[in-house]
Figure (tube, rainbow, N blue to C red):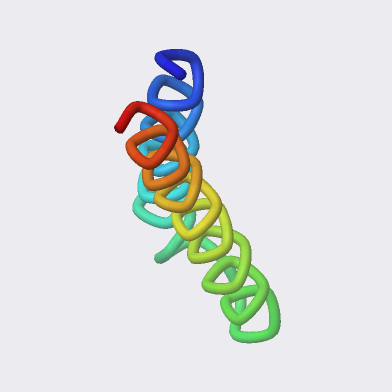
Amino acid sequence: MMLRYIWGALMCIYGVSLYIKYFQKLSEGWNITLHFLSASLCIIGISLIIQARRTLK
C-alpha cells in the first residue's frame, strides 16, 4: 500500500517536471505529445494514490 503511494507521487512529480522541462524547447507537433504524456503520468499517479487509500480503509 505504501509502495503505491510512493509510485503514485513519483509518477505525478515526473509528469509535471517533464512538462516544465520541455515545454518551451519542443516544436508544435511534439507539444501535443508532451501534453498527453505528462497528463497521463499524472493521471496514473493519482489513480495509484486513490487505490492505495481505498485498500488502506
